[in-house]
Length: 440
Image (tube, rainbow, N blue to C red):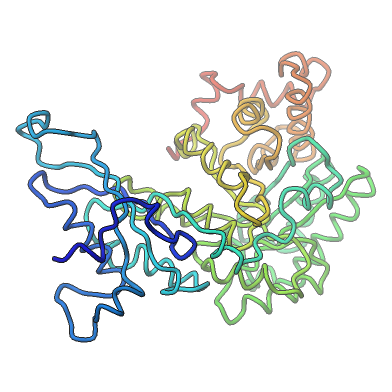
């Protein structure tokens, strides 16, 4: 195979404004020609196929072929003698530059290009995407972002407290509103539908659900003197998504929610960039495990978070790296960095963390991520022995304790709600907390 077009020795030799750079983890048999293999990958995902076809002219290749800009062996072997003689598989990091002209601002086509047919290959995982500013200017990103959310809620510094309605599904608007009110009155800033109730099911029609929950929010807001946002889950078939959003807003919803992996990044972008959508978008990452959980295939969760931010997520859910889902701390922190770090002109997305959160883990989470985080608790609020209002109060008191660098045990001395939460669930690292969850 000719390497002059496809293999570019260093990234600096490219006009990087014209390329999105994909980084892959690649495993290959020890005897493989890895440069040939990566070049074939770049070709497969751009201009060519397994054989040269007449229409694939040099002009076409120059315009649209992928370029292999780096291949790193892990470890970085320099001689055959250092490779174990019984090694059957070697690992590499490969970086391939894809011409932006191939997929312009079309996110489905972008994904089809960088991890399309090759996603069926063994031992190939997309671990990152680097976007030039010339590409991201085509996207508006989050309407509100971190600061916009803080301004809406008038919460200047502390983490936001999020709650997801439980039971997850099967409840009527009236039943859900009762649960909603209790959690909101206890101090929850932002309440969302569970990912398992969306659109307009027969037992909870969209408009009725919004009106009932927003009435509960207003009642709670008058009592606590704070604002509560409600993210109604509008996830649905593409032909109903925008209609759901507009009907929810007309009914009084002050936020929306979308399950981004089932719905698609393009669907979220459509909502975020439409001027009629005047409320924040909370994005749930359910089903992401199908894409990200395989350590040797699919895409990294960092890529998912970056695409969600580019698409317009004001808040993006990530699972806490503890007991319930068994996540890895450094990946958890990396996703938060992806949401918050400078990204050309795209506003920061607030990372929303959930999955087995109780008051006892709050200081640990804030220690890992800082204050620009929404701490999400479902069962940690609704299953509090004194009720969901007490559960929300205990969560807020745990946040306040962490903000003031007060030990939870000391804060609990003046708070029966927090004291009970710690008695039942324990603090991070305790044997009691380690035994809480059975989904790991």
